[in-house]
Amino acid sequence: MTELWFRVPVDQIGYVVAVVEAYEGLANILAPANSGEICWQVPDAQLPDARALAAALAREILLIEIAPPSPRA
Image (cartoon, rainbow, N blue to C red; front, side):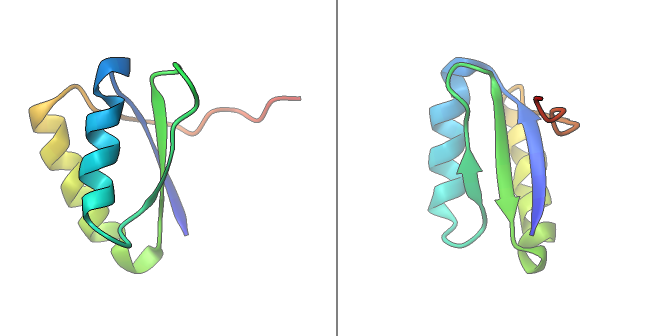
C-alpha cells in the first residue's frame, strides 16, 4: 500500500473524492477536515492508474502532490 498526499482547494475536495471513488478499488481517501490535504491509500498494483488519474485531475483543478505530513507528537 502506498500513500499519495495532495494539496487541493477545500471547495474541490468533494469533487476529487467523488472522482477517485468512481474507480472502485483504486484508492481509499483520507481527507482531514478543512485541511486542504488529502491522502490516497493506493494498493501497489493500482499505483500507475492512481498516478495517471492524479495527473489528469491536476490538469483540471489545482491538485498538487505533497510530501506526507510529519507525525504529530
